[in-house]
Image 1: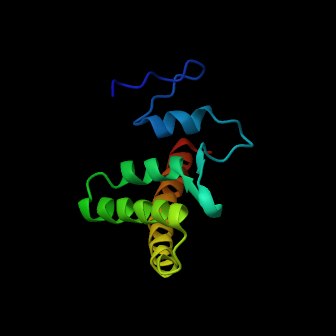
Image 2 (image 1 turned 60 degrees about the horizontal axis):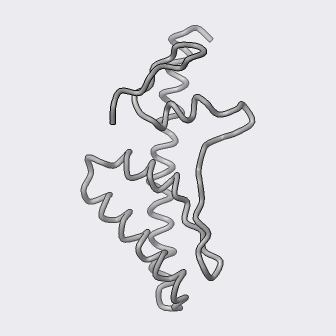
Length: 119
């Protein structure tokens, strides 16, 4: 992807499209996270999936886990097999822990940035 242009209002520059998108959100919005509604009550969080893949791009084992989890979710949504339930639950717990790690790193980065700016 080409270099992301700075914010036209404040001039802030961004490392990736996720930072740029987050910057454009209104104060009452937490994150842009589009969802794909699947059969049988499942929802695929497309925005979270893409962020997770991007954040783990240099970790092939994590990418494999994320892709398998997504594939299992899609399979379960289409077929609704009881046997997949525990596998999916385990994968969701693993993915949630990865996401929590990413969120904690972002929070620390933001707090460090605020402290450096004297806010």
